[in-house]
Length: 130
Image (cartoon, rainbow, N blue to C red; front, side, top):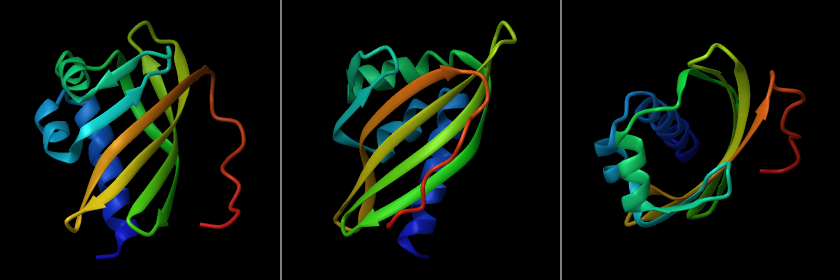
C-alpha cells in the first residue's frame, strides 16, 4: 500500500477516533512527543490530548470535505477541511494540518494544528506541488 493511501486511512481513522472518543486509537497512533495546537490556541501534549479525546467530541457530526496529503520523505503533511454540526444545530468548518513522521517504518502523528470558522467551506487547497 502506498504511503499516501496509508496516511489517508490514518487521517480518516483519526477523525473516527475523535467522534467515538477512542483515546486508545490515539494512544497507539500518536507519537509520544505529539503536540496539538487547538483552535483556541491552547497547546496539548499527548497525555492531555488523550484525556480530552476520552471526554468525547464537542460536535454532533463531522465530515471531511477536502483532504490533501503531501509526503515529504519520512514526513507527511495532511491538510484537511471538515464540516461539523454542533450539538445546538449550528454549523462550522475546521481546517487542520496534521504532521506525521515515519519512525521504524510506521507513520505516527507528531503534531496537529486546528482552526475553526463559521459556515461552509469556501475554496479549496491549491494543488501546487506535493
